Image 1 (cartoon, rainbow, N blue to C red):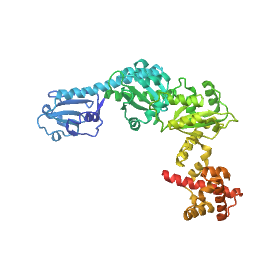
Image 2: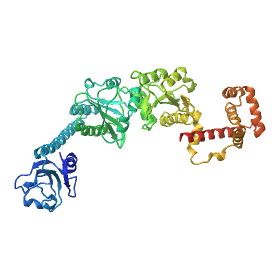
Image 3: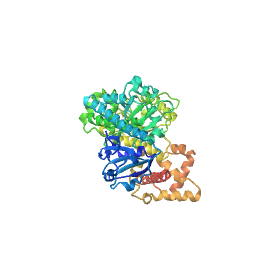
Image 4: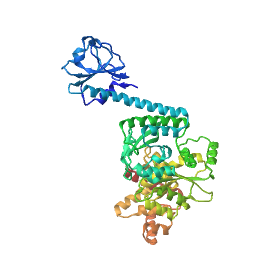
Length: 520
């Protein structure tokens, strides 16, 4: 139990009129005493409080001690002491006994934290795991505590009967946070800003009067979860802020020791998927064992489906609406919240096309709730989940860049654009545009026509007149006329697959460059 000189300076900053330092401003002391009359023996580990009028001549030569002095006789402190000391000088207007008591309170708080540390350490020594630590921490703070991981899975909580917050009562009943809850929390600016700091912070939700105090749990400088204290029993104090930091460190050590970054309570499949996404599983045998533990059957053909819920609004919907709806529409074992997306591993039959999955009910649900979906390519090695998760994210990203306005985006439809984006900073694609495309663009500009768009739609629809006319909203005879005009102008050979491929590729390059420029 020690207090530093710097801590004292911070505590009494509004009362200090002068500060004097020796070389060690972080000098610590373990007790506080009044300076007595004619005192000439002092310890470096004690803070001495007194009035300047009581100082005697022999104290002039003191070294490496810490003084808190009330200047009651216009004493020239800087001229009196021969050596540099740590001295806090206050005016005669300050009550020396009140100052002493405030300083003593700092020691009491440190002792309280020390005792709390001992209690938490004892809970670790008992070896009963994270639940025992949380129970001890809740008793110390006299308020309920909940521990969640970075994916909002509940790892542990104290006595549920003492949790009065309606949202957290529901989350604990489910053993996980609903997607609706997660979306609402992620949009709170107080949480967004608080998680960027290295200090505990308080929040109040619109739907609950219960104040919460949050602090990050970090392992090897990685944010792996949060400690949440609910102000259900007594108001928060500054001491609670100090203790929640301590609790976070203890929980982090226990999580690392037990290798539990996630809740394993009835969520074996979800944890398996999270570990696959994090590339934590290194061999196929471990995957097989985990699949057996989850009690599920997975065939060899998969896709990853990624849900972008950034525009989803949970207002007016019951807690759990989003997760229940996804479960009902997709009939899969489970989904997880990962990197701000909902992620689903979908197991499909060999003869089944993933595009057949997305019926009108799903499209209506996505439109109604402003949700976007990105679908990866099919794959066979379940250990490559992270790679195909990134494909799903890219499908959503390029849907936005290209302004496709599709609720469902398939990576195989935008794969070429992904390839283009990887090389766009190194290659001047304009040098690779087919001359016919450039010629049509110039012709349209001079003649107020749209032959450029007509050729693109015609090639995109495999040179089908009927489909092209429908997409262009013109008569099929008009399409024929325009195609003949293009042939006349450019001498294009529409039967030459190499040439038509080059032209179509040029269109895609031009489209990507133009749209990505708009985004930037």
